[in-house]
Length: 301
Image 1 (cartoon, helix red, strand yellow):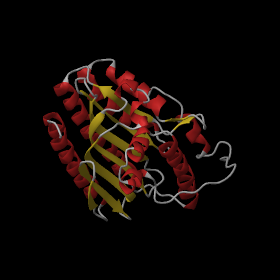
Image 2: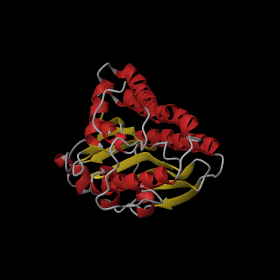
Image 3: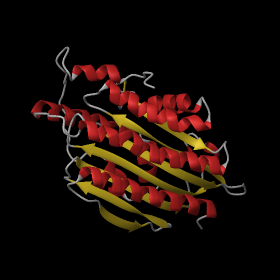
Image 4: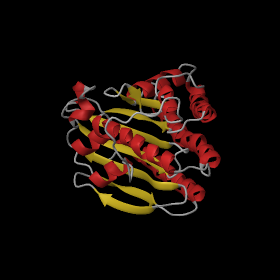
C-alpha cells in the first residue's frame, strides 16, 4: 500500500514533470515529448517522456515513477545495512538532457522520496536529489550562475546547506578511475529527514524548480553558439565519460536495475550518440584541453 505521505510527494512530482516538460518543449521549439506509460508487477508504475531530434536537444528524457517492492536491493542497503530485507516505496522524477550544441552543457536532475518498512520496526522515510552540470566547453559565467542558483535555493534552510550539498555533489559525481569529476557539480543530497517532513518536501520542490532557473538561461545564451565538426567530435568523446559514470557508479541506475525496474526508462539517461577513442589526448593549450581544469572541485558561488 502507498502511504499518504508518498501520495503527497507523488502529486508534487507529477506536477514537476509536467512543468519541466512544458518548459523544455517551449525552448526547444522543434519537437515534443512522447510519453510511454508503464506498470510494475510488484506495484506502481511511471511515465517516461522522451524528446528526440529537437531544435535544441538531440535527446531529452524526463521520467516519473511511483513504485514499491518487497525487499530493498543491495545498492540501497550498502550504506544502510539496517534496512536489508525491508519492503520499500519510491517516488521520483529524474531527467537528463543531451543538447546538440557542444557549447550547451549536458545536465541531470533528480528528486526522490523513499519509504522503508523494516520488519518489526517503524517505517523510515527520506528525501534525496539534486542537479549537476556537465559542460564540454565551459564558461566561467555559466558555472557561477549555475552554482549561484543552487546557493540561493539552499539559503532559507541554513547557511551551511549549500556548502554541504555542493561538496557531496563533487564527491558523488567523481569518476575514480579517471581522477576527475563528471562536470562542475551542483547539489546532491540523500537521506534527508532531519528537518521534518514539510521542510524536506518544500526543499525538494525548490530543487526541482531551481533546476529550471539554473538551466534555462544557459539554453538562451548558448543554443546558437556556432560550432563545427571538431567541437561535435569532442562532445561525442566526452559523452563517453557520462556513460562510464552512469553504468559504473550511479546508485540510481544500479537501484533501478537491481530492483527489476524498466530498463528502457532507467537507461534513457544515456546519450543517443557517443564515441570512444583509445589514448585520446587534446592538443596542449587547446579549448579541449581547457576542460580538465574544470573537473576538480572549485568554489563557484
